[in-house]
Image 1 (cartoon, rainbow, N blue to C red):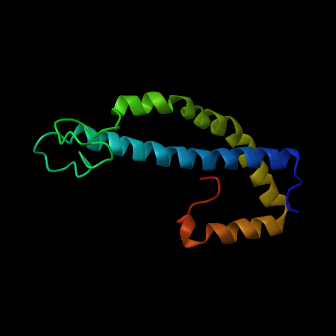
Image 2: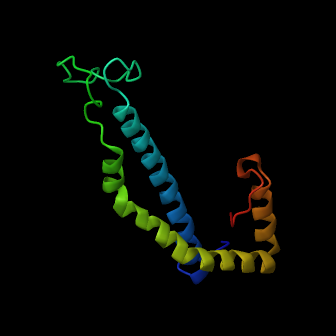
Length: 132
């Protein structure tokens, strides 16, 4: 194996990359929630923009004079998601160590360097290095 599970290198990289994936998922959910909240705020009477207003289950009132049923305010979204912003500090705390471990591996293990260089050259990476 490239990394020994339980070793310092493995742990540093695993924490950093695992947290990065959690941050990606959190950010996606945050942006989707903010979009819904924004749409709810702008969906008043006669706006024609709130296609979901009054169309949900249990919305028999027929009123479209306010935000969508079940939508949150933008502030409410941030309040609900505030604890998850800690992911960024976890990532930051481990980034330097993981980055240094990867840099050392690239210098000392040509096979790892070749593998990472090949991955970084793919269109999906858009010319960015692993450290980006």
